[in-house]
Image 1 (tube, rainbow, N blue to C red):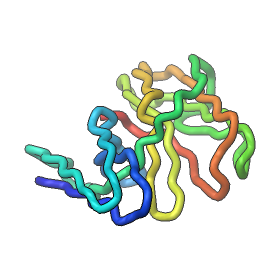
Image 2 (cartoon, rainbow, N blue to C red; image 1 turned 135 degrees about the vertical axis):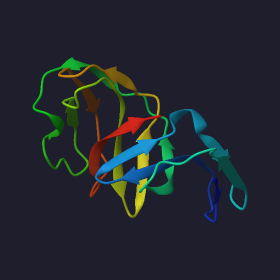
Image 3 (cartoon, one colour; image 1 turned 90 degrees about the horizontal axis):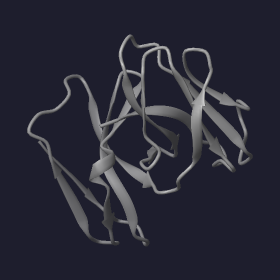
Length: 146
């Protein structure tokens, strides 16, 4: 499958391919491409994930402070709705196997992936990321890094 993104905006963007499957997001963190207005990039996949929806994601280049932590299973933002303020995003892996994860957020029909902040998290282990500030009206989450 070929996936093509054309930048129809007025400023250049770093973008990557990704997909959604159920309630989970997957980002190809090593595929970020810088695309000028009017230009395009194409990614080629020899195979695709069944029952998934492919899309283009924004590659957020910011490096966040992070570390091992403790949390309930899955993703927990603290505070829950920072609306531009500081936030810690906790993730505990309860999948039964190790998972490669990154933080991200969703706003205005676009996913944003923090591609420089990946962790390989063993089962029943937890990590955190510190956001000195957040994007208002965005939904923060943990994504799987491919």
